[in-house]
Each structure stands twice: as structure tokens, then as C-alpha cells.
Length: 188
Image (cartoon, rainbow, N blue to C red; front, side, top):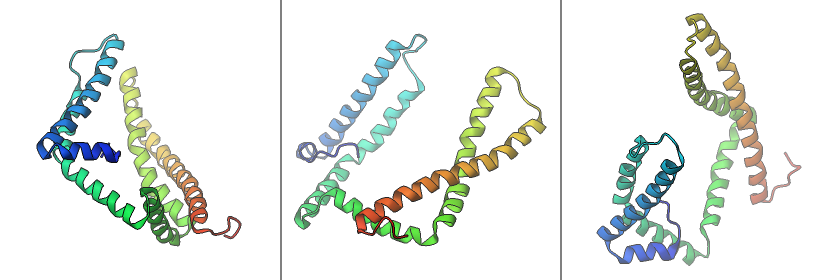
């Protein structure tokens, strides 16, 4: 949900289910159309209709469930107020619970499995797509051997990049965890 302001959510809910969903759709769509319009004005070869206009359909789908999401968001806010917490406190508690469980696998396994395998494989797809675009734009299609060599080179590079990204994530999450739990930065 894009709207986080409690007063604005209450205003939408006062309008009723149908009006709230329609108003939300109109607000989000008009912002999107304004951005799209500015983009077409400043782009020299822009057309009046672009494929990105299909996102309006996605906004319509999200608007259909806006009212229910707004009510659940307000209930969550009320529950937090009653307990004396704010949403940031809830996020911190959730982070400590999940990271306490995730960190049990150890730094090496976390970086190599989650980072190297998962993130590395996620990096291969866009990198291969970018390489395909570059070769198709330039008109120089490499031979099959060159494609295979490129992929063989790409696998270890993406695996290493993913592992390094997850190593940085580990250090940041560990620092945040120790800060929130009061553990010493020097212990461990």
C-alpha cells in the first residue's frame, strides 16, 4: 500500500468502499499519467501511447483491494497505539527474530549459499540479457563457442558477486542486530 498517513486513510474509509477504491485509483492513475505525460513531452521520439501505460491496469487491480487494506492498516495502527509501540518498533522486533534464526547457519554458508547460488543465479539472467541486447544492437552475433565461453565466464563472476553482496549484507545485518540487542560489537 502506497499510503501510510493515518489521517488520509481515515478520509478514504469515510467515503465508503466503492468511492475509496475509485478515489485511490484516480489519485494513483493521475500521478502516473502526469509522470508519463512529462516524459513524452521531454522525449523527442515519444508516441502518445506507450506500453508502459499498461501499468494503469495494475493500479486498477490494486485499487480493488485498497479499502480492505486500508482498514487492516488502521487496525494495525490502533493495536500498536494500544500497546505503546510504533510501526518501527514492530519492524525492529521482527528483524531481530528473523535474523536471530537466519544467522545460525553461519557467515560462510549464508554468503556462499544464499549469496553465491541464489543471488548469483539472479544476476546471470539480466547479465545474459544485457549481453544479448548489446550483440543484437551492434549486429555482431558471436559464434556458439563464444556464447558458451561467455556463460562459463559469467557463472563464477556472478557467483562471486552474489557472495560479496551477501557478505556486505551479513555485516550490515549483524551490526544492526547487535545494536538492537545490546550485544557488544567486539564480541563475535
